[in-house]
Length: 404
Ligand SMILES: Cc1ncc(COP(=O)(O)O)c(C=O)c1O
Image (cartoon, rainbow, N blue to C red; front, side):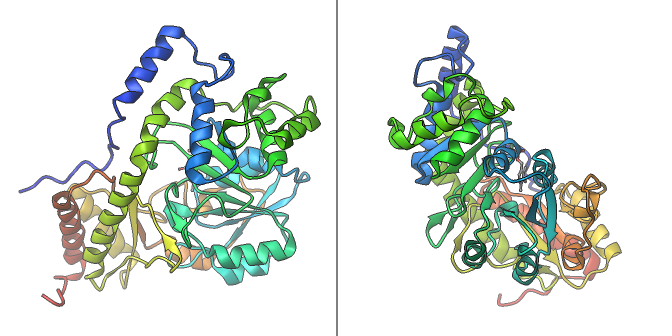
């Protein structure tokens, strides 16, 4: 019998990272602002802005730090209300609280995307919006931008899981005023920890750069598009010099050295991730007890995990399914059933206000999460699909097979 694959390890880091790290070890030059120019972090920012097609990028210690700095850069007043989906990671409402603002949660549908009716109903009560494209599932950005632009409400895209995803061919993270990405493990580019913020707005990036820890005149090492000096950026830095607190959320050169050699791998990872996801979705959707929601039409995804809903099963059957999968070697997380899950909104007991989101709660009680690292082969995908379908069958009786 073929053993179930290890779905926890990511891809090896490209060998080129080792040379870059050796050079840093030799020079001891780990701080991004020591070198007069071309520090690995500065090079990463230029490369990432180029990759995404934005004017500015700021590399920081995490995506959470990027979200926090985005909110601070927007100059929201204390206690400003910020709308987020009720299905996201606990770090997202946490970043809002850290910025002295108040998270407001809206409903999410069975397809893991923002419920636009609840979003529209709550929009007039908030001053900013963070769209978490949770697990890489893109919400309806056309409708969201229409509603927010009409009210002049700034949109921050939490694209932690969306590096490589496009919407009408446009990169996710470039649609709102600012986009934030994660380089934490289990993301398309893995540095263990790390994040990056992108924007076309010189004033916003200047504020974020200074608050990220560009003390004194270190902001001079941040350039405009294509690494050029940018008069609008310099004017923005001059405007904010000495006027902002320093939160010191910088990225180290070591992280940038791990990230940069992965950028040329991204297109392949996106292609393989999507191919694997579509194959797995087709196999799982054969079962009437499993539903892998379809993408929205303008969306082209870059998945490194798969989510699916169990259909027509009660809670004890869902628990039995998860136990059966685990005993066969594949761990399935049911978001709403695993204890203290950081993606279940009722566990965010640090929120200043509580929200009852019956639709999101119902989805979380049957939504399953399985890692699908892009390096998996077709044979390994088949082993995973066989285990999941056999586990469904163990609970429901044999799975009918159509069309073969
Ligand atoms: C949707 C979402 N947003 C933000 C984050 C925070 O990312 P980081 O760990 O880089 O702070 C995560 C973490 O996985 C996440 O899942």
